[in-house]
Length: 216
Ligand code: SAM
Image 1 (tube, rainbow, N blue to C red):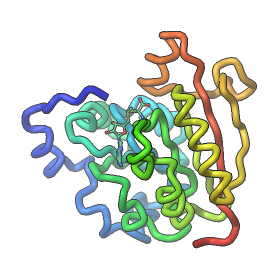
Image 2: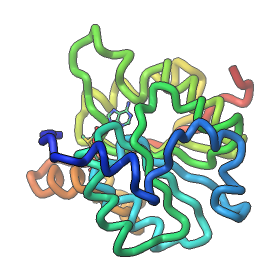
Image 3: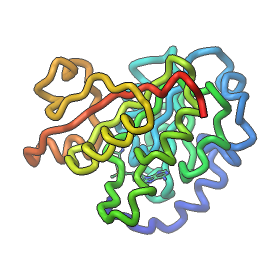
Image 4: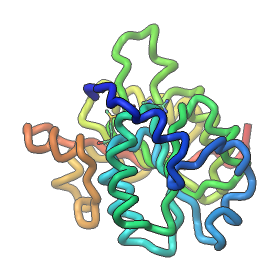
């Protein structure tokens, strides 16, 4: 994603009521934060938020947390949330490296990873959001019935992610290399990157995976 430094974006993150400050303080208490027992689903690397804002409007009985590393990108999602004021959506500027310090064991029902940065160099493989290091963190915070849903147009990253999930003992389902022409196309909510890459003619890959029963 081309990042422009938007003046004041970082400062806005520190004072805006729709941005969760010091999210570690909510670890284990997300239900209380939302004021209900509805499932909590998160998107890591939400970008400008098209996907999560759509889901939050479609599913008022699900709680959503959008996580994005960069203020300048998150600002777009924030502007939209200021208009919509969705009670079931929280946003945070946060690096998912320490995601298990924000959510307690079993607290998350679903993790969405959409068009995650590919980090093409082998020496950066550990930074990929579907690497074994991240999968271990996800396994800790997911509920027993929880899952990770991953979409990308990057075939190398998709192959890596399938192999990594299998090697870590995760169970794969809904694996497709052409989501928009698959049986899972109906009901698919697109992201900004998905719209862009699909319009350019790139097939969209998708997989769903569930962690091993034995937690690490
Ligand atoms: N998900 C959006 C979409 O599909 O349109 C944005 C995709 S963009 C290629 C990847 C996003 O993930 C960027 O906005 C980037 O800042 C964010 N990101 C990458 N690594 C991250 C991390 N460790 N924690 C949080 N966000 C991250």
